Image (cartoon, rainbow, N blue to C red):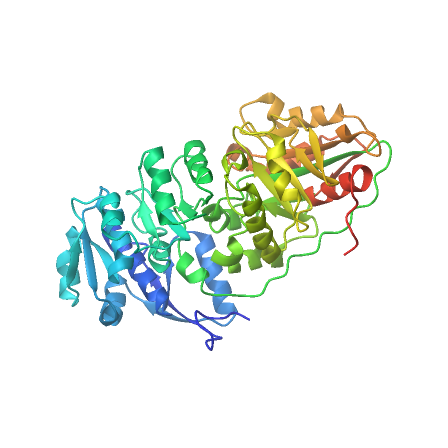
Length: 490
């Protein structure tokens, strides 16, 4: 059953706002208003042009959500302005938009660009603060205890109406462009082990968050998280079929799609893109998909959709590096992060954990294997296949590194190059671990020929006889069966 924002509301109401033609100023107003209303149990679904947005809306309607159309943000504001204390003024194009977004949580307000202030005042709201000329650090200094100690949002000032609803609904501090030292200090001030939604580069950003014990959830273009997180639903992960025992003369291979840490990708273009979940090739061969475990809490309807529409050949593992994107090498408490991962993968029904570990070694993933919920680890360094298929064992469980990558621009990483390399592997899976291979499929490659799923299809067609393509979970099961601690019967 689809359940609403509060207990006792089994069939939630959604106010559907079509703001595809809204200006950037109107989008920011809509997002911060959406976040404030979500805290009050009033759920506003913002429509955009992506098919995934309409897909999720139709699913919610089919499962009992009652919808009411809203012409624009001004109608929404007119109907709900009485529940707000007022607004915070900002100027587009500088840090005051993030300062205003943060102040919305403290002042029970919405963020208003100076270009539309006259209309907001005409709608009956009063100015509570002027964030122009202030940056995010000013706001944190003025309100050191005003923000969530669990969630922070890192968001480019140029992004007007995305994920700001989530920041407001979670009372999250919103910032961008800090130096590494200031970023780490800010996150430590907010609280231990923060979940940081958003994006600011990759290696340096993820390293900084990892160093303070937090984790990153790429989400800077997410829409409607404040709604999806408040619509709980039951979902069941399809059970992974136990693989047939290995035979002499076989090679065992699994293909795994990258970027499953990316919540915005998984909840948007991934769902309907023909290179991904909507590919006509899906179901023709075993394929493994990385998923963000936080989707069980932030977007459970997305997870439910994937599980309900999965084919028997679709497998699932976590995105890097477990509960969220971290580099384990820099994390101050890997045992605590392993515990956090175990709790989230239990909610998702996942058991295999991906680790992406810049600057570290494979042993950094060992604390994850101490958790009984973890079947094994799929390991990649910063260069993905830098460990060349090496396997490290701990407590009878494997940390299996990627041997190959499908990535455009390099013949060795092309379908032909990978297939030829697989054909040269040993074919003795009973006695030689080199007979097993993990292939990471780069999510952003090969658009010109139909996307990554088409590339996997072409690679599979070129594999020699005797190669068995399985899911990543099945590959880990077979490794454990033949070289480690067999998986206990379920």
